[in-house]
Amino acid sequence: MPSTTLPAPAPTAPHATASPVTAPQAMANPGPLGLAAFALTTFVLSLFNSGLISNAALSAVVLPLALFYGGLAQFVAGIMEFRRGNTFGTTAFVSYGAFWMSFAGYVKFVVPTLPADQAHVATGWFLVAWFIFTAYMSIAAMKLDIAHRVLFVSLALTFLFLALGDLAQSTALGHTGGFLGLFTAGVAWYVSFAVVAKETWGRKVAPLG
Image 1 (spheres, helix red, strand yellow):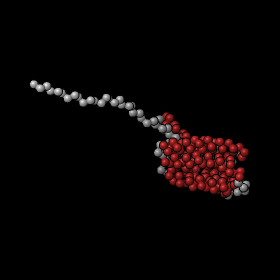
Image 2 (cartoon, helix red, strand yellow):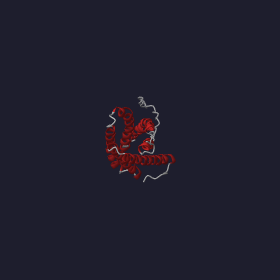
Image 3 (cartoon, one colour):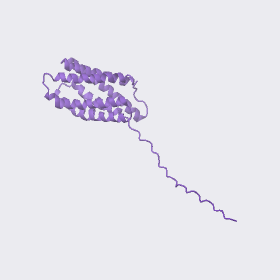
Image 4 (cartoon, one colour):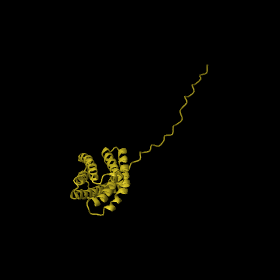
């Protein structure tokens, strides 16, 4: 009887060791940082714009804040918003961070080179341009909560009155812009507090409307 040769079993692939799947690292919310940086720098500058601090020589304290906190920290917050896919937050924080850095450079390096009797014109139109930007950001902010709407509308008015104060060389208009800036800073601080407290405590602490 002929012998029957059984086929050799097919080689089996070694068991692959499954690599553990790690969940993507959650990113922190950069909004409170950007708002706090904006609020603090705006508050200090507005103390001088409103006339509450009349010694103009002391206004130099604003420049390092404008460069590092209102400028750099807010710019970083904007880049983080970009990674989170937040178009509004990216546009706002990067733009206003750049505003503060450009403001520091303008005051430190450009203003001393301008004709003394015409510097107010350059400053006025600088502020008009930022009013235009803030005006259309205010329209976009109408889709957000009440606190953000108030923040952007008050900021637009701040830029407008400061610009008119410089162009018209009106102390009253400039002081009005300064007081509006103090109000704007207060609103920005409030929104920053509301968001960071909610994310830290895990529940709503302050309403945003």
